[in-house]
Image (cartoon, rainbow, N blue to C red):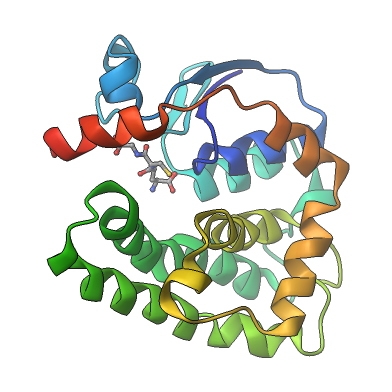
Length: 222
Ligand SMILES: N[C@@H](CCC(=O)N[C@@H](CS)C(=O)NCC(=O)O)C(=O)O
């Protein structure tokens, strides 16, 4: 199995999952964005996005899908739920919620706060940032009386959702748009950050492209 990864990107979900599960894998870390700084990568994944996972003939580009795949393919049910589990639907809902509901507004806020920070786009960035915090309502309510998302234990759903919180935290999105996590949500993120597998995965990053990368992105909106 081989994973292509960039610092702080959604590929962290897949890397964290591999570390939790103790699976063997090769890791290829690239500067961000690889479509600019490592153009050979387009030969591996024409989208240029990360993560990219190759496992035999299986090729995957969706980080939450990779988490689900690893549990089911390698039958490590300590990290997931079987179809006949009463909370299976909730588990899937969190996995999909992670990107379809949470990282979607974050991505737009990130674009206008960090990659194209022109004055006229700032209200758009603030709006999408606030929208992300409003969309935490479902999670905030759940965490009022649960430590984890399903089955009272850590699963891949926590990796998927936890990454969205991690991204908001590392981007300082709350400061930028005048919002903050509810106490129970901040505590949940702190619990996730304490996990040794998370810490190993987070430490495996190479240097990203930094401001140089941002200049390239501004020029290349393809
Ligand atoms: N739906 C994909 C999204 C992958 C994605 O867009 N990743 C971003 C980084 S978080 C990326 O590769 N951006 C670089 C680019 O678009 O060139 C997932 O959840 O894994």
